[in-house]
Length: 198
Image 1: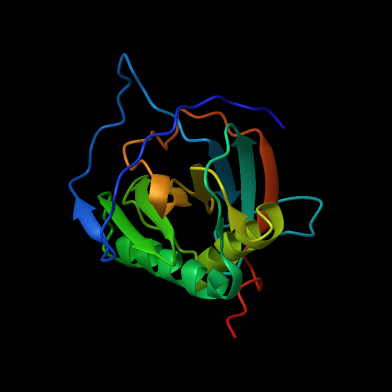
Image 2: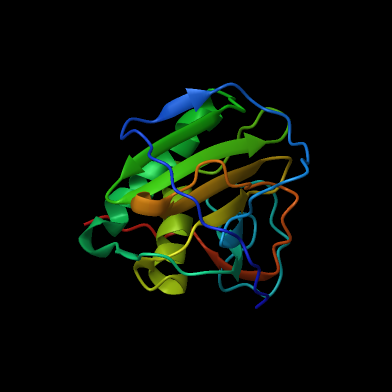
């Protein structure tokens, strides 16, 4: 696992998802990076030795991550499934709208910002598969605790890349860069049949 250094800043987000017009992904002289970045590839089955499947709605997610600095932690606990469900609903709603805009919200002590890239910024992945990938990451990689600002790259074959920036609400910086310029090196898989709300 490679470690990256990124400064922590703070910001407050509304509890209701907000939308902003799409922005171009340009590099500036000063760019703030997340503490962690993760890549989800919805095209690779979690227990498979190869990824020969095509664009299918019920496939898993590949997760890549790097960690930098720790901040105040939030234990997700019983809200894990609701949190994954809320984030995946935002992502799937944006996909259904074919929106490349930015969507932000705060829920269960976690803030997040989502934006997609790709032809129409849409995916054939089902909401439950996206939720399963997020749930799988938060439960198995983070052990149910979020201490960092993390950038998650969700892919499902084709042209879609969804970038989900998440972190503890009390020190979340929504201006942190989360996009294709990050190098995603360490990966795991999840999503298909992982989301089991109680």
